[in-house]
Image: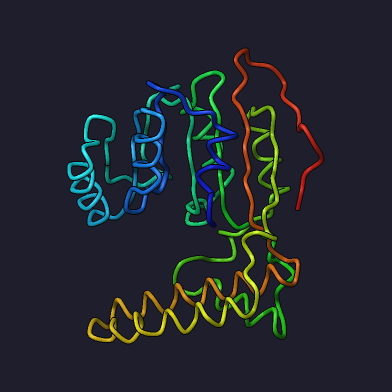
Length: 252
């Protein structure tokens, strides 16, 4: 979503010298934006070796090697030091991870006291999508990238955060800003066509891109039906360990 970084920064409040984990860094856009905008130190993690190689090349080109550290790692199995980061950022990467309760517990451990987790993504309890049109949508959404277990609603995730020990737990629902008009969706589909055609020269790339296109379309369909939302989850690790509470009722 446009301006996702800005929303996340308002919640995480990055400042010079702080340590941030970009969990699921892709090609490094979030890490580079953070390093350049706030002079923070960013560890970017991806399970794609080619992505990490490219991130390192870009860091050198941008003169940001001194502020970034890119690593190949699996977020579910990798071990980071207790209290290593001032904030952990998941920008559209949470839905690649399961079980989510386990991941949220890991994030809590990685944060310093007073540290913040920010997560911008799609959220939806898809247990009701079992037949008819909804079933077809679910089938598209869970082919290739995800299983039904990868999808959980914002309310369930807030509960996991509470159980892990987070405080100041909030969910900012941004679905209305993430959901384009049908006209814009048609334009986007036509714009993607040349890329899909070009990828035909590499069948594996074509299949991956086609799956990605179907996942995006299915997600938008579910958002329109009110079965999925897009927004920002955030929570803070208390400076002094205590029983935390939700700052507002769980949002779906």
